[in-house]
Image (tube, rainbow, N blue to C red; front, side, top):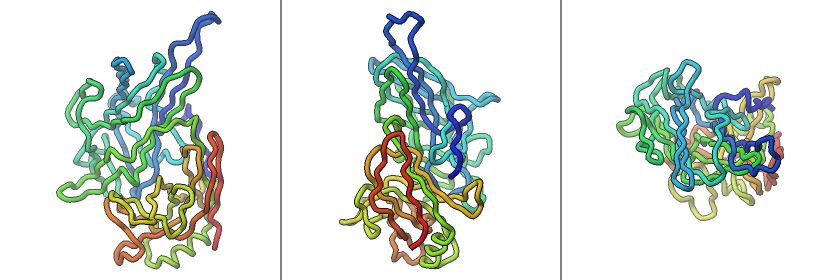
Length: 337
């Protein structure tokens, strides 16, 4: 498997809330924790998804707001290519900001660009073309307005709690759901508000494993064609192979199950002939995973099925139930049929 980066060395992939200690007086009661923030990614069939992050805004339970600028070493917005931070890899946006105990809501300002701008938010598609990246959501965050035009907003309805001790969170972008390709009169990519979630790392484990080259070749021979994108999809427990649906905006047919997330199958850095996958932040529970080599045909805004003529999509193999325990890794390998 790819070596995971340590949190201190990362550059943009998770949210971390770290509780602070009290003073040297042992009788003093703790009243605050330290806040750190970052982001993580699940895959999309593109070469680069860079977001230029500008600002993080928090709103406390009593209406108080906390506003943190996000800047690069050169000043200005902090650009992050999400595809560099997949699986368990994370990186901070905000570090060590002390906050009173309590519940908070959060939103993040980012730069919107409808035209390709290598110094801002952009996408490089599968063919190497540079396009703009825009969000569907604009407006204020907890009463804080964007400081300049061309600013988008990522808003999280789910509240989180700052408590004593370590409170580690991850903002994870599931790009297979959230990244919408150019459509209609739009010639740029769009980030939809769905598919971005806040995860408490204290309550999550991971699922990872190897995929052999022989297994991948079997899928490709079964699928036919010449273009393949291997991926592993995560489903609820007891989801059989024939019930594993694609990502889609509408409801599935009776007996079908929507995926919860997906992970790229990538070449192992240390062993070029080996391939692996990883779901870095999975809530404790029971799941199944499925493998496909046709992820390039999974359009989250369309219903893609095995009988589609131009863009067929189906799962090739399934795992059976896998148990995820908080703080632990669960392994499942796809090695052959």
